[in-house]
Image (cartoon, rainbow, N blue to C red; front, side):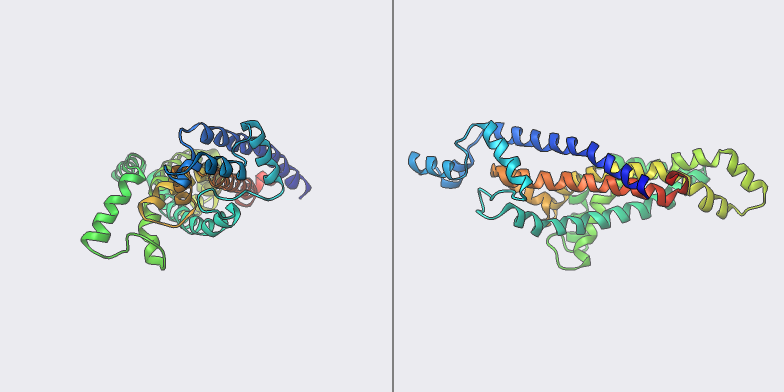
Amino acid sequence: MKNAARTILKRLLYLLPVLWLVVSLVFLLIHLVPGDPVQQMLGEGATTTDIAALRHAYGLDLPLSLQYLHYWRDVLHGNLGRSLRLNTSVTSLVFSRYPYTMELAIPAIFFAILLSLPAGIASALHRARWQDRWLSVVSLLGLSFPSFALGPILILIFGIHFGWLPVSGTGSWRHLVLPVITLGSGMAAILTRMVRTTMLEELGQDYIRTARAKGLSERAVVYRHALPNAMIPLLTVLGLQFGTLLAGAIVTETIFSWPGLGRLTVSAISNRDYPLVQGCILTIGLTYVLVNLLTDALYGVVNPRVRQ
């Protein structure tokens, strides 16, 4: 237990510099983007005095280095600032939208896993046969179809043509179907190919031949022996792909008018809302860090040898 806690703490210390670097780059880049958020807020008819007063109120008249130091000072005190556009606490805005993003991302992960595990195992068990070729074509199609193209197609077919599912907003499980399929399809294609590769590698190992020689059923050989060992690299890819999933949620939420963190980030960027952009990116980065820590913890659950 002590070794596990020490390992997780060490991983956390490694990931903190990455998080700091991401937020720092976002801070610098958003300030380099042309356009004045204060001018956007007040409009073209605003006087120079009004613009200067509002810039002073939000601390935008300070040198960039001081703004950066003040931002991290507030973050360490649990204060993400106030939205320039909405004049509301960034923390409250992020917390109000974050559950919607998780409501979309978590089902998308399970959708991808439920598709990829049986498809990847079947592809490995039927190597070089028609099942393997067919699943390879389908997974390649899923990899080459981006969410910004798949989403509108699903809306046209299932939302507009057949009228089976709603195409925007929230409210019931029916609102989740199209966004979850859009968000999870790309990950399902990647995981399918990963499951196939790792299962083929494990099925060729000596311990598998030994298990078969002892008379174990093929089901026991595949699911009790090969699959647990194949899950280790799969968990690694799943943890890394979660960051891609959050990035894809920005596009998917915009397509389906989903009130999540991704859509809030797009709105904040278009309005040059510096504190809100930084708060959203910091939240996404923290989520990614926590998911990777959870992935490390799951290694020992899936494969007991890792605990040792």
